[in-house]
View 1: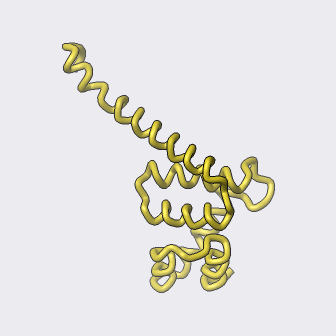
View 2: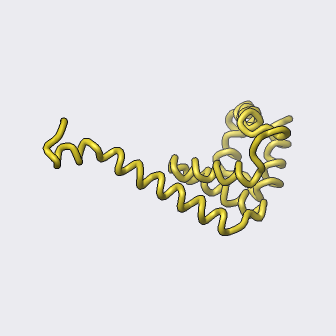
Length: 120
């Protein structure tokens, strides 16, 4: 599949192409082809264990946790295109928030040790 066909497919599936993807094609057309190959590895078009909505919500969660605004925007577009239920999206955001809050508590363990006079 050539880069322009890939961009057209992305527009169809997500409503628009993320600006970084669009710009990457002008600089390195092979990059988007590798990106699509990697997507097929991570999310096989046929025979995958997860349905498309679940995949999109997992991708959204990873983008939020990884603080990737471009990926969050792309998944927001995809969520709109797929018509994923609002309640599922909000629950996903709540789960990510909980995971990140839990990470902060876990990361603060040395601080708690120091305050409690424990191991350093």
